[in-house]
Length: 392
Image 1 (cartoon, rainbow, N blue to C red):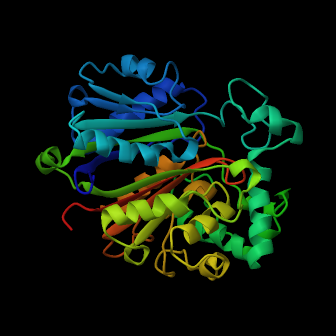
Image 2: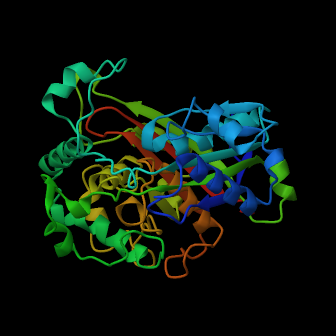
């Protein structure tokens, strides 16, 4: 069964806060839910499907369902694959709608790692049951950032990628963030600014790393029949792919991600290719994440990502592939380390002509959103979705 055109994204909302000192995680979920439903023009009591990930407090989705007062649900999903969770939820919601399990699915994300002063990505996880990998790896002090640094070093070794080329990804994000009043980092930076920023884990500098933010977002996915009756533009879900990648008993290649498998699945279902995409939202926990993902999705040949991202090629109105026009995780926000949801939000804005005029892609017909969960240096999940204008 194909999900192509069966489901539409009808409403979106991104919380404006980047530091939620006086707002609980549950309240953040409720506020983004209300915002997305209002954007879609849908009543809360009509929601019959709810999706969240591990950021939702309580027992899976159950506590949030009660907190937000949903009474007519007949489908729920709390799949958690880290940063790719909320792109994956788009596919799962479309599948549920196609199977008749629900007609209106609400998907919410929220968190406050910044307010809680979490040392995200820089401290090894303590061994806890039942994860089978931690007892074998914890003694070596793995963190998120040094795992990504290993991948960056390997890509440099194999293909001659440079720090200056990686820096262009941050430069592009900063050019877009200057037009986003909610972005944490709104100043435009240069390649020199990036490579002269403090080293965090060689070869990744501070400006190669995403921000840590509170906040969240939500979107509403509906059947195409319901979409026709709504008084606002909707976005059609055309294709979706998901895939894991792990250490493979030690036989791991650090130069590619799970997007190598999730991307082709999404393109095939949508019936398009990378060359057809007008705008791309790429998960940007680190600059190396973007570079490898762009190669894996087929926007350029393997090993040529460094050349592809250089000289402003990712800047809207300048380059061939406008990306993360809200500033992305590198400059805007990265709520609770699950930035996949924000990638979908900006893709929808582009397709609805609601991005900032300075970064809006002209006649944007097809957009891609991609999420990365876990670590490209160890085990990870990838999820890719292709979206299009409902009237296209």
